[in-house]
Length: 480
Image (cartoon, rainbow, N blue to C red):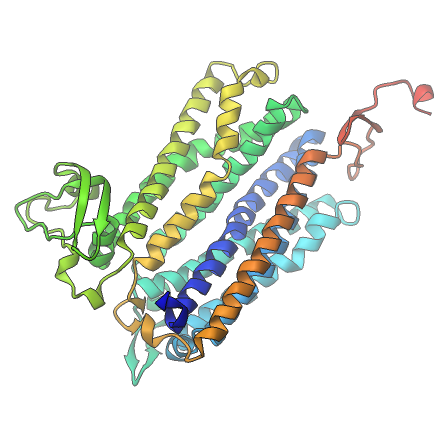
């Protein structure tokens, strides 16, 4: 239990807890905001009331998600001053600016128009409301841009140099458009969209499986599936590009991702390990199952037979990542989920082409609906696993090659950090339970089909089952 007296380790644990938990919420809000733009745009184009009610229903979950995201995001940023003050002092010239851009350009834009999007349906013109929804989605996704820009710069710092312990920026554009930036932003953007699509599809599948407004939710399911047809394979390709970048810019991280201890010299192609049991003390894998020559071909090296693949032993123990098992399996979990979601998309597409997803037949696809329900949380697991690989694999550096983690932590008593770590764990557990309660309550109640539509006369609705409304088709005299 030596880590309980180590300020750096406890600060890392606290930041890991707050970051992993916070990441759950913007992942959904950024992707779902785009979905809300789509369904509201379709409603304005077709005036089909189903799409209006979809926009109203999913915006409730969006608002709940946004609230928890704000509550968990602000404390995480405060840690740069409380737990990581030397880091902020050293790289604040650039890192602080980018985080400021995220707050002023992205968060403020999203927050400013969120009220109109959620509560302005009957108060503003439909076009003004649609513009507000677009701006909310823009703000949410600008957050992805700036946060990933800052994180990418920590992975491949460019645009300046360290002078007397501080990073001096010479070229802001070079720092912003660092080597990791474009692929990292794309990878995260597609990850948030894919996660949101499978959450929306999974919730819709739950309604369909339980014979609750199957025709209504089949529309949401098909929108999610149609988008997933493009998104799921694209994410696999962008992930491949990201792995290639790691090979060229962070070979020690790649070695940890593959539990590669010994360097494979030029003239040989490295094996690809499927599963293994890394042993850091012995600097070897106690056992593994590997595909001969697989890694070189996966990376598509331009010189497969002459480019070496460096092993962890190439670096001194203090200069290479630790927790190799965590990095190794987090990477495989992320990749495995990516292929699993792509496989589910392919299965669903085949059923769609066979006419099995029509409103009349979709409720009969029970195993397919169960698979989508099972897949709903997998995107979250993949995203958090990817961030574990990204951040733990960067160690022992906070800014790769420039600033060590040990030199980035604030010099505060370990007991102080331990108390705040426990406080965060308890508070976030309560928040998570509250989110599950209110989220499940929204889902159980279902969409309100009795809400008036702006600029259109609607039929009154009756409640057929608790929380389920359908238009009242009775004569006017009977309704009265």
